[in-house]
Amino acid sequence: MAATLMGKQIFSISQITEKVSSLFKESFTDISVEGEVSGVSASSTGHYYFTLKDYETDDTLSAVIFKWLYQSIAFLPKQGDKVIVTGKISPYGKRSNYSITVQKVERSGEGELLAKLEELRKRMAAEGLFDESRKIPIPEYPRIVGVVTSPTGDAIHDIISNSHRRDSSVNIILFPAAVQGDLAATNIAAQIRCADRLGLCDVIIVGRGGGSFEDLLPFYDEKVIRAVAECETPIISAVGHQQDCPFCDLAADCRVATPTAAAEMVTRHPKAEILSYVDLCVEKLENSIRARIEHARLLIKTFSKTDGNFFIENAKGNLVRSLDFATESLINSMHEKISMSRIRWDFATQKIQLADPNHILKRGFAIVRKNGSVVKSSGDVSTADLLQIRVADGDFTAVVQ
Image (cartoon, rainbow, N blue to C red; front, side):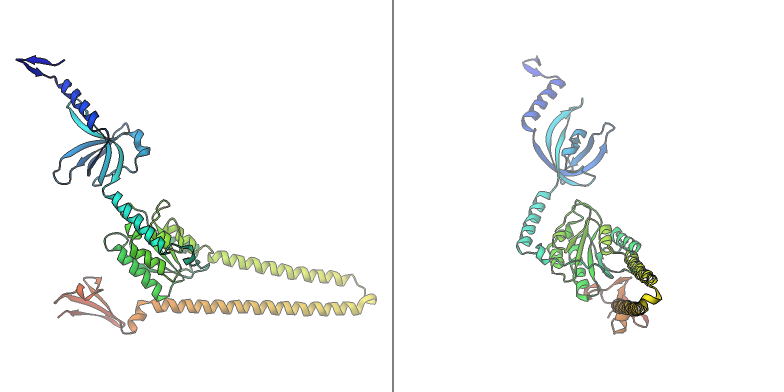
C-alpha cells in the first residue's frame, strides 16, 4: 500500500508501474500506430525488435514481434519502411519504459492503394480486357522474340541465356524499358506498342524479376494493361515470382511465373528436339522401305523358274515401279520442305536486317546523343549543348543554337 506523508499519498516506483500497466491494459489493448521503421534487430531467442519513428516529430516507440507470431504477420518490416502496426502497448523492464507488442503489420497507405487497385481490376474486367476470348495462341515455333524489360536487370539475362541454351537459333530483340519508378508504366506501355507496331516479332515477352509489391506497381498500371490487351502480337507476361499476379498477367495472352519460364515457353520445341524428331522419322521410313524390299526378295525366292517366271517378272516390275514412285515422292517431299525452310529463313533474316539500326540510318535517319544519352525530345536539349550525331557513314558533333 502507498505510504502517506503530511496527508499526501506517497507511491513506490513499482506501484506507479503497476498503475500505468493497468491503465495500458484498459486503454491500449488493440491499438494501431503509424510510423517509420528503424533500429531493426533480431534477438538470439528469435524475437524481432524495431523502433517506430514519428514522421514529423521524431518521437519513437519501441516495438516487438514475438517469434510465435511470425506465422500471422504478413511481412517483417525492414529499415525505412512506412508501416501501420496493430497490437497492445504495455510497460516493460525496470526503467518503466513501454512498447507495443505487434500482432499485425501492414504498409502505410497499402489498404487505400489495394482498394484503388481492386476498383481498377473490376473496371478493366468489365471492359472485357481479361476475357479468354481475346487471347491469341502463342506460336509453336517462334523465331524472333521481342522482350520489353530493363536492359540491365536479371530478367533479360535469364531470358537470353535460357532460350539460347535450349535453341540457339532463336533471335531476341530487346525493347529497353524502366521497370520501376514513376515513369516505368508509361515507358513499358510505349515499348509494348512499339514492338507490336514494328511487326518484327513472332511473340513478345514483357516482365521483370522479383521485387516488393511497390516495385511491381507499374505492371498494375492501366496504361500497361491496355497496351498488353490491345497488342496484336501474341504477348507473354513474366513478372516477379510465382506468387505475384499483377494485372498485366490477366490481360496477356499467356502468363508464366518467371522470366526463365518465359524463355522455356518460347523454346518449348527446341531446334535440337525438332532435328531429332526428323532423324527418327527418316530412320523409320528407311527401315520400312528396307523391310518391304526384303519381303519382296523372300517372295521371289519362293517361286521356281518353271512355275512362275511370268508372275515373278510381273511382281518384280510392280515392285520396282512402286519403289521408284516412293523414292521420287520422298525426294520431292524433302525438296519441298527444304525449299519452304529456306523461304522462312530468308524472310526471318530480312526482318532482322530491317530492324538493324544501321539499316534505318541509311534511310536518312540519325541518332542524336547528349552526354552519351539518346535525345528523345526537343525538351532534352538547350542552347549551347554539345550533341553527338551518328548518321549512316559516320559521327560528327553539333552545337545547339
